[in-house]
Length: 497
Image 1 (cartoon, rainbow, N blue to C red):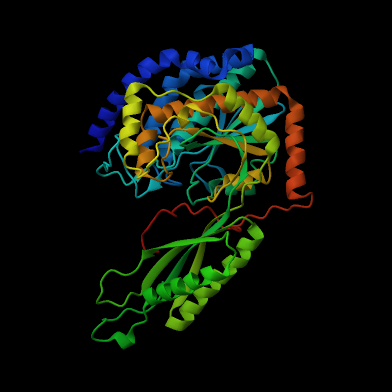
Image 2 (image 1 turned 60 degrees about the vertical axis):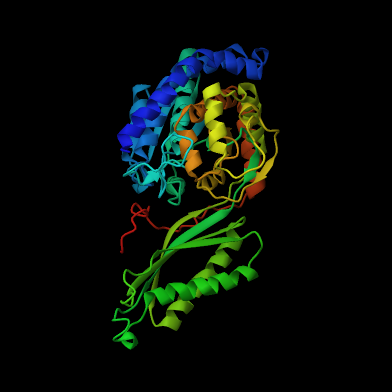
């Protein structure tokens, strides 16, 4: 099936669902949250977003179709920039050596509140918006982490706040940060390193998920590198003694690192893929590459573990008479939690509420969840807001670097069928139809309400800053884990360097 056929069929499928859903959205929101709990200003903000949701749904689906991987999101970034410009934002693009990064600003004065927007897809994944596995021909990537929704939803929130500022002639600046290559490219780190967040009071973000929550929490610090071994090619049967196998270097390194796993802190995560291993069994490979990720909750511990992994690479090269070169690809600090902001976000998420699936969406979800291999259904979570708590995440994100410099808070919304794993074809499928859009609009409304709350209550931003300083220490000095390298604009390129 051609991609265009899948796209047209998909659009017909969810466009009918939208028409019925659009009419009921404001009523649904007020029913879930309790209209009496919302002020007139909040109700107006929600109504403005509901009135524009078809536009932002279309933007999200265009980015879903583009499915551009990190640092190659030219169409996705351009679409968001043009949308913001048409809403009166001033846009500065091509920041910190990244052609697809941008900052869109509206308003003047304080407070300055930033909303993060992502838009990169994951390589090696494609899927139609159907509840069965259906790889789309000629589509090499997919939005398995929901960043198409992330970018469009954040843009929607920023524009809604800008209209509120203009209508009420309030002081304050809203910024939408277009941040490329979250998936292993650390785009936000370069923006932090170059000072683009230095004058920001608060940063808000969100992420696609299978449930609705706005908790305080942290993540794992993370560092990655491509480890390249260079040897000498030779005929593997006729003259093996003249060869020096680069693949032997990779395998020797991997063996030593796998032994190392027993002797690192329990919270450590180490994973790798061999990206190049040779092309023909009868040729001794003169080049091989392995791509490593190492994670730990503390950046200082991560640095020590990383040094041991690099020692294994050097030892492997020595033992196989090959040469090794290491290119650090990315590095992210852990998230610094901020309970002050998280509680504000949770209160607003609770006001917005979850959503109820239509009968068609429920049939889609029931068929999709058959692929999960779960005995227990989680359907119904999409209508609930989870109680406030503290998350200790096992993943990593470049939002972490932002959070050590600016008070930061985020939320998750049910853009996927409950029970869906991130980075899966099931996430792409649900994110490509009305279930994903419903979750995106919950996020947009929560971000807009939280921004409005912070602009109307400057004491909250000061409390959040005080908490950030208390957690990180007054003597904290930011040092990016990726060092002084330039953005790896070709990091998704799998060709031999």
